[in-house]
Length: 398
Image 1 (cartoon, rainbow, N blue to C red):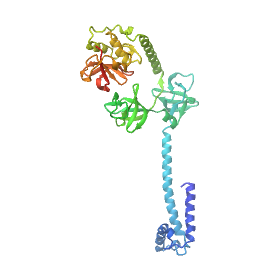
Image 2: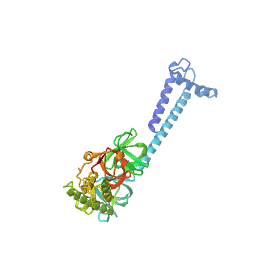
Image 3: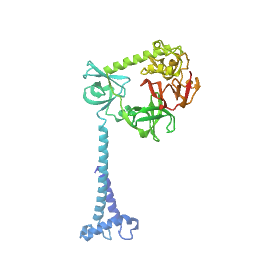
Image 4: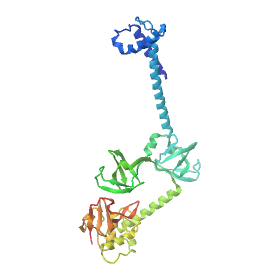
């Protein structure tokens, strides 16, 4: 029992003793009837056992029985409270222990990770702001960490170690899909439009926490809602990158930038195909089947936002526009504008070559319930099921 609680127990016992010393504990002690009954019962048991020193008489001159009962009651309560406090303290220490060996990078951009605790040592990786690492050892002004595929030494100045707050701020919430195919909807409503279909095992970045059974996520370039019943939300962390990985990422970024620049130059003339696409000749004839056959040649090529190159990269409307330009048809570089081109047909009457319009997206129907489209930066140009999203319109231009 801590010191303050002992003082409280002693004070309570003493106060009770003084109170009862000046009062006759009998049947007329109505204001204290509840408390008196318990005390008198204990005192009576002592009297029956012959313990005269603990008898509570009508004059209230003997208080040892009263004091004993009160002291034991206070002691029992105090011990229970002390046990709860001790457990709470142990839980707090255990919680803190989880963070003692965790380090979070606090830098404007990145910090060097070296093979040894020296500024002259070989560079083995880079750790970026809010990347997480596990502390292995410390040596002077250096801390050895393990982060992702990188193990090495970082200057202490660039790390925050043992901070629960820093770790929680570094966490990136992801929603892991735990069903075969998950529908991403425009609004938090089961009847809302489907923006995308995500395969099982995928992870989606959480935009906001669950509310009313829905989680707002980022799917490709769109933000939408998924049912909380079909995802598992967990904290994930970014980690340091090896020098090899950094160089590869830099090279890929340069290549992507070059392709984007090239596709934008070609886009100066929206009705013409890019020079790199000219090596692909369109099939003879102007049928929808010819359009579909020609478009499928480019499956696997990259998606580039704003692009119109069938080989170096196009976005959804740029892809449709460039395919049709090979057949002498000029189309707008806009998915919403495509809803008004040609003439409308029903979904039950779709034919290869028809333009299928979705919310913020457009594709080409190739028959058999399938479309070919520039899907997203992850998948590039690919073939999908035509009903993977809610269809807004089907347009025929040939």
